[in-house]
Length: 237
Image (cartoon, rainbow, N blue to C red; front, side, top):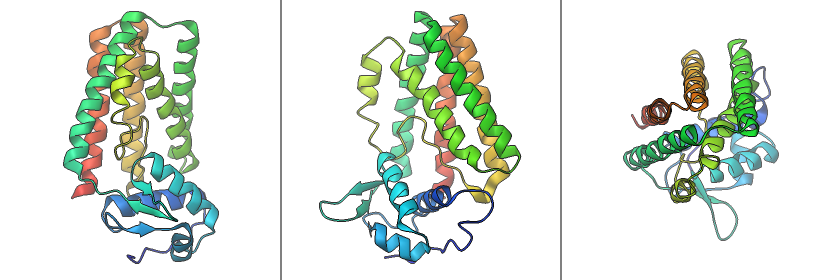
C-alpha cells in the first residue's frame, strides 16, 4: 500500500478529526497517491494516519457513497478506477438533467413547502460561508448539507419523474452524487471564494424558479453544474 501522509495535527484548531481524515483520503485518491485498485482497510488507514478507527470508518462510508471506493466481498475497500475525462462527460450529462429539472420546477411553480426547503438550504450555505470566512472549517460540513439539500430538492420536486430516473444511472459514478463537496484546505481562500460563487448561483437559480423564469433557471443551473467539472479537473493535472 502507498505510504500515506500523517495527520499529526488532526486534532488541531479548525477542522474536526472526521473532516480532516475525509478530506485527506479524498484528496489522496483523487490525485492518484492511492492508486486505482488499491485495497484499503479501516485498520490500515487508522495506523497510517495515526488516528482512531472512528473517523476512518466514517470517511470510508462517505467515500463509498461518493463512488470513489467500493466494498470488497471480504474486508476492506478497493479504490475505483476512473478517469477525469469520463467524469467530465458524466458531469456534462448531469448538468443537462439538473438544468432541465430547474426549468421544469420553474414551469411547475413552487409550493410553500418547497419554497421553505429552498430558504432553509440557502440559509445553511449562507451561515457556512460566515464560518468559513472566520476560518472555522466546520462551515464545510454545513455547506455540504445546504448544497445537497438544494440540488436534491430541485431534482426531487421538478415534477418530471423521468429526470431523477435518468440521473439515478449516474449517481453511483465517482463524484456524481448530488451536492458532493470537495474542499481543498491547501487553497483555503480560493475554495471559500468558489463556494461563495456557488452560493450566489444558488440564489440566482432560486430567484429564477420562484419567478417562473424557466430559461434563466435552466441556463444558470447548467452553468452551476459545469463549474464543478472545471474544479474537478484541477485534480487531474
